[in-house]
Amino acid sequence: MMKTLKDYLDEQINEQLIQAVLSGRRGGEGPSKVKIRPVKLREGIFYQASATEGTKVLHRNYSRQEMIDYLEESLEKGFGQLQTTGQCLDGTVLVSKKGKMTIKTKKHAPAAPVQIMAHNRVKNYILKEGMPVPFLVDLGVMNADGKIITQKYDKFRQINRFLEFIEDILPKLPREREVTILDFGCGKSYLTFAMYYYLKELKEYDVKIIGLDLKKDVIEKCNRLAAEYRYSKLHFYQGDIADYEGVSSVDMVVTLHACDTATDHALAKAVEWGAQVILSVPCCQHELNRQIENDMLEPIFRYGILKERMAALVTDGIRAELLESKGYETQILEFIDMEHTPKNLLIRAMKTGREVNTERIRETMEALHVRPTLLKLLYPEEKLPQQKGE
Image (cartoon, rainbow, N blue to C red; front, top):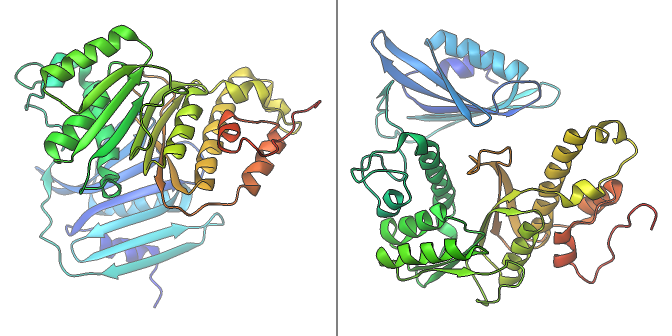
């Protein structure tokens, strides 16, 4: 017999729940994602909803019936998906654009008994608070006792968030040989040092990481710190992304906040080298803002700030599709930005070898009259979409 939503929530929302996640907002204002877990309060067991809105996470506790009512309303009016994980039962609710619900459940062997944590549980970061890490001390994120400097707590969270992305792609990195990683536009190299420490010291990978940046003083400081920590396979060089020829193949390419078309050159290099993993946080996507034209969208494009934001989103969407066309499985994920700007999307691409047809994305580029640099770099011999007036 087909379960109703009420039946589904009644059997899922209880003390055997490990986690539930609302996602896939179908429009309107509100959080992009909500994570739910049972918590112990003085009054008994409640259900804590952690709602992500932009870079903020807001927490609220509900009784069991309040949580069931909240989830029911959220799926009817705002979200398109609910995934639940329990001790013996997992489930999924999918909501179509027309509001039709598909409910699936799956029983499994009992997991370990659910340990319901106290409300004030400490966040389980990859790099732990209270455990001093040399490069974080020298870079001013924590003191010698491992206490996070108050003004640098956001930076500490950002570093851990980035390491979570690294943790997700570990199956793509070989264990039997040296892993080569290039970090373009590494800057002060908080994340470069974090990558090396995590992969080499914590996960014991045989890893070589190369950081590249245009600033000579930054490169000198980073090399000095790497030598002090005896990070023998962490090296920094001064140079430009487009011209770098220091390696013939790499396993992973990282590019964070490379400005405008520098991101395109980094992505093209990654494809050329056959990188298994690409992690890119683009910045300052100006190129398409100068090109984008569409008669139907002109009433929107006449507002400069809207045109700029749409051009940035279109830029990254096209980049993701072009990577797909070269055999990568690509996602665009939210990333806590390192510079406190709205540029907080991360392109994560993992090589599968399955190339996707580019016809649809080419139609999109023609409709918007854009010819991005990445298209020229990946397909230099092919005819490009024509600009108006050409």
